[in-house]
Length: 262
Length: 232
Image (cartoon, rainbow over all chains, first blue to last red; front, side, top):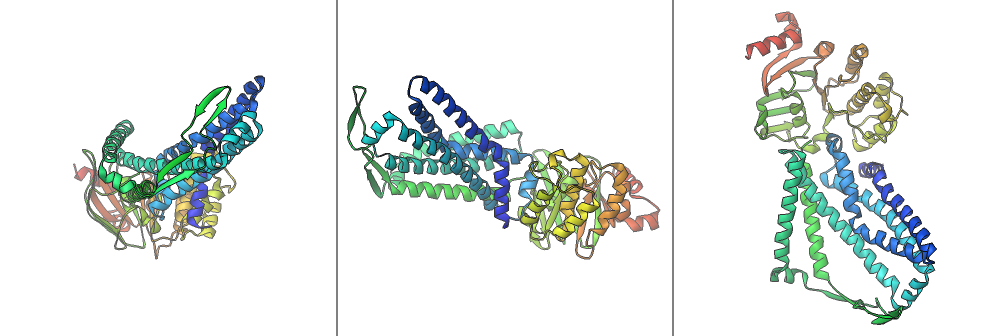
């Protein structure tokens, strides 16, 4: 087995507790929803609500997974870092293990959601109005994109935290990292309002149609309007974000190789 | 082989090592001795590329040291940290997969010598047995440099002697240099070729152990004590 695969396998073992906890919580939540929903005759609808929430919240899954994984490595940095593999391999192995865990969790929650939608009467009414397949693909893809995005931002700031830890205690290092994060987020916010940002991201417009069959529908006598029938995205914004996360990942790997200390 | 030139390591206001110059060549077992906080572990971590010098340069076989020098350096940490979900065999296999120079057959020989059950879970092992496993993992690598930070710590005093004698048979003295830090100087004295005394981050003495015995009729502890007294 190659060194990278073996490392990824180790990361998966390290992440077993963090993988099991959300699955167990989800199973319990589905059970509770089915019980209380069933008493009102809307068991599947209740399960669908729990499943939608559990699936959507997975934009934070990798953030949660990596925070646990990197934190457990904190006390044994000498074990993790005393390795001839480059820093990007060490970080990529953690990311891959997180993606595998997320995939399984996503299948569990997404599968439950699909089953609930297929079985609930309200959802079958929704199916008549919405193109659920299109929505699922679009929403699902963005959950994964956001999850990877957040994970790499987290890795970058965690490396900054480890750099601060060379000089300060844990609390001070966390505080300085948090202040830096806040400051950079503020500056980034200012940058997004500039015409340069608009030029870099506002090109390659793509329109997605076919999320909704009708612009409105009745549910329990109430008219609901939706704007979801057409979604505009810009290829430029995806490419720009991809470049940013690649640069942050390279910077995190460089810090791990050259600056982080045990 | 290992070269430290004017190396200083500073943590905020605290100086851990100051202007260290050191050249270590292969074919020797070198003891790094000194009181607690003198800079022994810092020196090993610097050579292993796990920390970085504030000033000066460190090279191993002419190559500037960073974390990836792990391909040429086998490092045993003083810390009792491990991946608790593995057993002894899985830990050895994991190391074998991470390091291309890891000799599985040699690891098995050392493990048997250390009397370690391959199926024992790491979290169920005693501290002493985890210490033995660290020795297995470090010595089973066929690398030019072996760094051992307090390898005897936690080992039963009754078996230390036999383990130290066994160590020598698992080291390839023609191709390797071994640097050991220890407080158990008496136990390890018989296998050392050279000894380096460190005090307050500075090297205060570097001597051949055999010469000490023959020329000055001194053991390492007496020599170290005299070095410490002279440096006051």
